[in-house]
Image 1 (cartoon, rainbow, N blue to C red):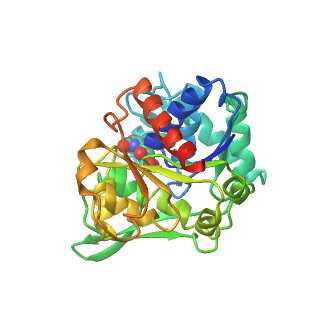
Image 2 (cartoon, helix red, strand yellow; image 1 turned 135 degrees about the vertical axis):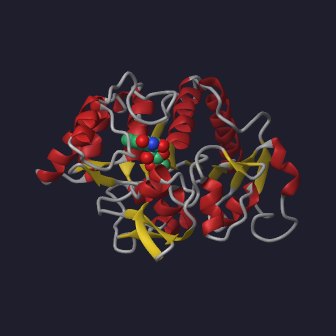
Length: 329
Ligand code: FO1
């Protein structure tokens, strides 16, 4: 079975680690190949280094090196380098880079300088983290640089800031007018991305941020059309439970784009290609009676959608897998 997933950082990575465990535990599905298309709109250059947070969170989570409490960065890391930078007055300090994590950013930046593409670099990094042995292929959504910016409202008028400054530095508290994914319109899908969608047997959307993670991947020219034309059923997991995000500030992002922060509001963003939608029991009652979302096969998950531990993420992934297998027939 060939399974393709589109993913952002923490929520996507935990779901996909659960998916790999669920596949491995199933004698029929254990040999399945999992291809992950990662959002790179969160990428940022800091201290002269290229940081690719969602790719790295996926690498570390799937490769066993993640800081489990934070959900990002390396386990057992220290902040000596950033402490030195602070002593020199080097900014920014609102984005925490651990020493081991900086190793990844140095390697990425060196290889970019040597002319390697983000796809080639991701392949190298994935090899170090043992992803091929787990039958996982990690692809950046594009080799072209894309950076999500946020137009925020300041006293002096609107200002464009990097997504990470808004999300991490300002905790998504600064009122935002809109998101602008710089470079997205002319970005080409990375090698293998469209094929992974077209040739998949099942396609899954983890509970990643529908606006600044999945929404950005969908904006890469050709990706949305490939999903619309895919033979495989596309099954998504709601990132919203009772109006609240599974992680992060997805509710704030939905508000910025004028979409209701509900499981059903998010389904509406995917309705042109989605076949199945998994929601929390708390959201069962709110399904619309008509329109494209009502036409989807929605399923109420038999348990809390919140991935509070690894077995919980595995059970959720198994439920999404079962819905996709059922829709495949
Ligand atoms: N998230 C934070 O909330 N604070 C941080 O200081 C921070 C640093 C960081 C460093 C490397 C990395 O790969 C991720 C990091 N994140 C941090 C997470 C990340 O920026 C966001 O959660 C995602 O970009 C949103 O998907």
